Image 1 (cartoon, helix red, strand yellow):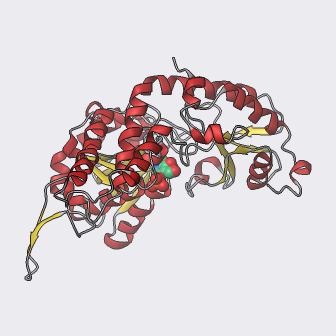
Image 2 (cartoon, helix red, strand yellow; image 1 turned 90 degrees about the horizontal axis):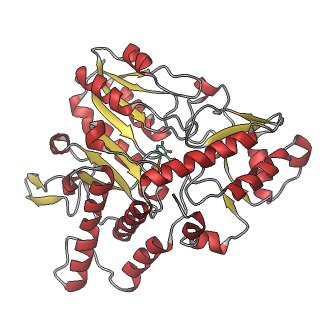
Image 3 (cartoon, protein in one colour; image 1 turned 180 degrees about the vertical axis):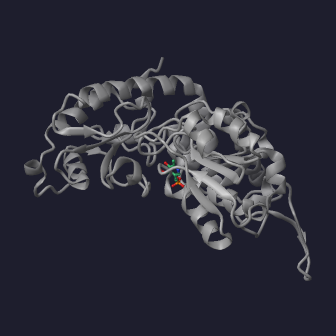
Length: 405
Ligand SMILES: Cc1ncc(COP(=O)(O)O)c(C=O)c1O
């Protein structure tokens, strides 16, 4: 069980904005004080680069920076050498796609869905242009759920990569990743999982799932911006070339262009990294683990069900994903442009997102380019949902005229 009142005291954003209802955690989450402290301490008490300095402060940072790998390993159940620091999940997915390029050839198929975020679509489109891979879409229901049957139907000998979000970012569809991995592997295909909306909200065990690669972002799980994680099975990371080259990731090079790269994972981390961000990510993971991912998952499910129940009683609201049990609530107010509706909610100090949410081919499933997304996290409360629903009741064309916030 979560003690939400206690949890809310950990978040200065909540204390400093007592009237704000923040329902945009799928875009980025709020940060607890322990994460802010970890970042500030780096600037105020122990600034240095990492893997370069032979002095005490640098040693502190080496320990903290590399220590975060152990925490990520604990979070997703992998080995610390399988944890690559990137800048965000977009970077992770680009590294995976372009790292796999030498293993792919013209005519090979990559399977995705219409519900993917741009960062799990555009790298594949770029490879389609560059080397002529085929992109095919796995059939889903109208809330973007893949079933084992539709997945089996989509698989064929030409499929070399399957790449899907474990939880989709607009509709909150939870995909059956474990079973999909087994099927993909039986065809010799790689299974890539975009964990941007799953890792912050539920237990993800990469060994149990048997995924080949997983990407996620710290900023969506109480951590700082500018840090992503790329998990890959060690042997696959060892076989993969980095996309970026530069400092730290090389062991030696000479004037003839010969170079020796460091071992995985450092070979993927060119240049000075976001040190304070990685240290803050460690603090965020410790914080989430102390609350418990299962507790977070259960609480959010309950809160979502409460919100759906209330919202579905409003005549002016159309919920796009009423049957999914998890993740963001996607909806529209009848006859009102989504951005105007979001502006109206903003005038009531309620933060939601409107538009297509970086899922620009999702309209193939939901048949609209415009929706409002309310996304919850474990610091939201039923009282906030009540305020949100009360405000939604008032979203009409007339009420949205001339709204400035
Ligand atoms: C499912 C999913 N994938 C990828 C991303 C991209 O995340 P980032 O902006 O941290 O790279 C997001 C962000 O909203 C997302 O929800």
